[in-house]
Length: 347
Ligand SMILES: NC(=O)c1ccc[n+]([C@@H]2O[C@H](COP(=O)([O-])OP(=O)(O)OC[C@H]3O[C@@H](n4cnc5c(N)ncnc54)[C@H](OP(=O)(O)O)[C@@H]3O)[C@@H](O)[C@H]2O)c1
Image (cartoon, rainbow, N blue to C red):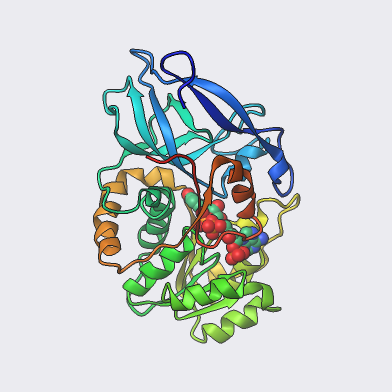
């Protein structure tokens, strides 16, 4: 909303109050009103955007903590938090972006942002699909599923695939990619409603509620009598240990994330790593932004599948910045059903 001065707008922001240890809480953040100049200084290479959708992502917990060794800097208490989002350019001093362009990439958790680092900003060229998809299937989480499954695991028809946190932003896609590849796929999730979605919406062959399974090793043995060829790990911890005991020869594990460990003061140990030797298995971690050069290739693959409804995508959209802190912390209790997004502004 424009204020008295020309080119200035009022700007609600989500501020980190203090560094967090353990599970993040809504009260670790607060909303505050400010103002922003809607002009990018000439020669600055900056862009000013109106944020449309913000993406809630598990990695943001690391930036809320004061960690010594991490791949990106922590947030600054007292400043707006940042994350992936979908936005419209209002003004640009950058040669690659112009007014009214739609973009996805790193932005601020506020109504409007001045973006000075445009390395991870992509122009949106296809608008026949929902714009919010660029916070999920057509953005960072989509690329994460694609890279982890295809580039790291080289799936073959008929292989046995297991996906944890399978109903989330990344997991729901990995399961569908596995089915498109002709694999048998099982997913785990934290509620019966999610299990139902996995089997009846995303087409997983089997799914289970890990909160109701007392012995993961036995559950996996029952669902994979022949063993697991590919494990797409989103959770780490006890589930990873159980997978290690159920591997097939030359299995591949894509270590995408370990959300079960993120807010533990003392991470659980992994006990069954000897299986990696015995099964001649490969376990590989990755960071999606190292693969962004493959984004055009991914778009070429995924856009027709969305248009032809060969891949579906479930989003959980919270309405308004005031609901953003609850949406973000909800990731760590499994409150989200599908990709958690926050709708901030209309186009
Ligand atoms: N490597 C990369 O570059 C990269 C990029 C993006 C994401 N990731 C990782 O990918 C994973 C999935 O991310 P996402 O964006 O798709 O999130 P998401 O699955 O949409 O949301 C997180 C889900 O994790 C599950 N969860 C939370 N606490 C858990 C626990 N203690 N044990 C087991 N499950 C738990 C919850 O589902 P339930 O109800 O099923 O418990 C929750 O809904 C995360 O580990 C994330 O860090 C990695």
